[in-house]
Length: 139
Image 1 (cartoon, rainbow, N blue to C red):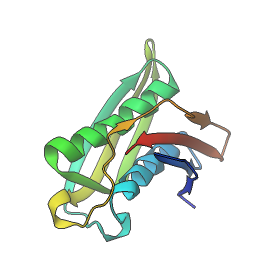
Image 2: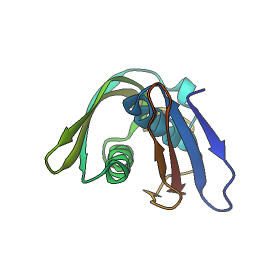
Image 3: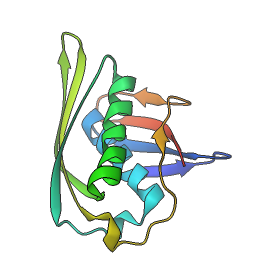
């Protein structure tokens, strides 16, 4: 299972899984896209390079997901899948780079708009071979 939606009264809450932290972060971006549309229907016709930085892993996850909100709003980009995702520890925190693939937002039926990522209930669990992240997004 890549991700699952959890109960939340007003917003969307999900937990995304991966065998690595990179995979869990990527699946979190896919889950966030699933709030907006059926990810399985989004074709792979465009690529987008995503980069973000954070002083810790939570701020890295926040900034990474925010990059996709910006891509939806400015480039009309809907995520479909990932190529390589790389998280690197730096002297000032963390960097993440990702090769994202997807298509034009206007070609698909959408429902809820994701307005923002929140730190509320955000969790990151990292263990060898079993990582997950939990996120609440404002819709």
